[in-house]
Image (cartoon, rainbow, N blue to C red; front, side, top):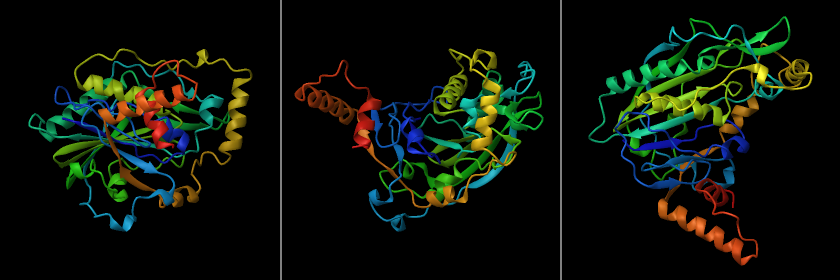
Length: 347
């Protein structure tokens, strides 16, 4: 089952640029890989890989969004919660944010979509759902804070993650009559459909959930979408979780588990520094709502697919090496696929 990746995100170019990585093979023993890669605010993928690019500059649009052919609507059919295993002991108290995390309390959420294009080996959708749910529960045993809630600790002015034995992650099930290959095609995309592939979570007021996931059945495949609070995870941390979830879904054991020990973070006057950051960037707690202008800006964005195969990536790397050598500044090592694609996207 070839895996495709959509980088659907509300954040700035800083976050977009850091988002290149492999799309995990979620379903056990069903993915068939083809060596293709992609460009422009997307990640190099190992498997028939297409991805969807967010073009932040409206003047760079390939064509007017009016030319987009609408797709069938996405219909939600079920919504449940996946709990943390009983064997996983929650942290004894709230995980208080440091100054580094306090910056992201009032910030757009992270949203990502993985597309899995079906083949003859694709299991029934109900079997996929069962595999996703059971492996998510197992993964939350190591990532229990993602099932918790972001809370405002009024007595101290801190913000932290509160965990309990009853915590869970909302798991939304949806369906769409459209062909999933349209979302991986080389065209401009229907933003309405992309938005519907990630679970809607109001994170504008504390306490709030930190993570929600959605599985959507398409004609010819499945989409898995995630919405996560930026204060709980940056891009790298989120993908550590997704990779662990994919590993569990394949019936394998994750190589590493995260550490949430706050005592390991040494910052001079750390508690007061975190509170001063909150006072500056989140002055209206427990409200963590974004300015309406942030969402107005999104209406000017367009999403379009650009596809580079393995040969294209290799030629990019060779050209970068040649340009540096001819300029008298040879590189100490060949560029990675990430560096090559970013260089092209930002040129």
